[in-house]
Image (cartoon, rainbow, N blue to C red; front, side, top):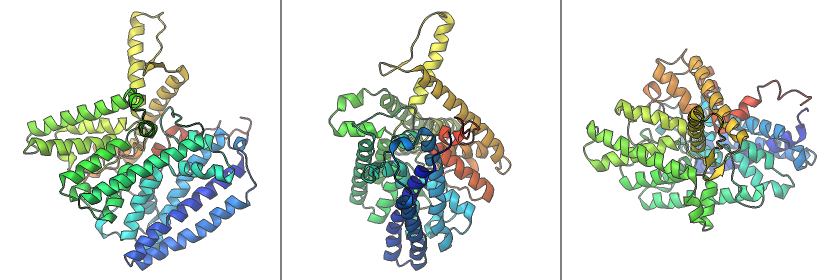
Length: 488
């Protein structure tokens, strides 16, 4: 069946208008810091986009929930992130802070997708308002601007269940309230509350309000944009680094578990298999890297080794990408482990990227079942996670996702290799962007950037970031003939 155009125009118009409205916040920051050209750039984009977006929303006839099928849901999600990245890039181009389209698209796609990769060679020269917007896109994209849209859809007479399903990361989505719209609202309440708490704690540690907001946006969105060249390492404070590390860890947890904890269901939260595996990965990786740093004498004392290992393990596993040390100089086993953590990522339902911990759990259980079947070929062996049987269609979906994920990585590494100086750079470039990490290794290491790539490759990498953010099946589906078959 053909796509229903009305809901696509209506939702995309609403999403665009909301993001344009959000631009007025960094415009106010620019006014406060007397950055006239930047304030005007935000205004020149925000006002017409709000007018056009709300006009598209109001002038499109009313729609019902059944008008938004899964087919429209996938299209809206895929198209929205591209539209948002283009719209979000316009202030950078108009102000002249990032004048080229490929560069601006890369930077904003990196922001909304919560990747944190950058093409900026002098971050601290960026205007205050633009640096604020750059990090604010992390916060907007972290929970998903479409989830925010769904939270207000009931007031507008629109249901958003199928968009929520297409937008939410991970193989499953726990329902934390009776309706999908209430779930979106509850998730944002938790998200907002954690952000406010982190801002307060950072301010109490001596960080000014502006820096606290910028780094809280990057932490809770697991994005990693900082307004300093040496990232969080700029703040030579163990307290500030530990606060950010802990909140990165929290942002990598399924937000439905946060909500359950707030409701008092602590025992249910602690029984969650994915959470247990996630915490075990963090603890084991931190201990290993800490030991390696001490053995190889990379640091002089256990406390420094713990701070650096705990911070970077949380930063990489949650795909935030903040840095307090140049881990590209760490021993090879540490770097290999960090690349593995890049691929794993955070929990399903979190703001983190990667393939998600739950998929890794299921993958190992699939491997274990196949080994046992060699000994007992006729045995029926259901896969269980947390004591519950995983449906075979979920197992098939996880297997298909992982196969497609690594096939796209392989093809993308080949494309990037035409411009990357070496294999390590090419491979970690692709892993870093599709897993929404930010920094890679070698020429795209934590102290370097992606500026040397051509405009075309930067646009390609920006699309990879979006694909990684909204789950690759959502984007890949749009390029299949069956999706556009009017008879299906």
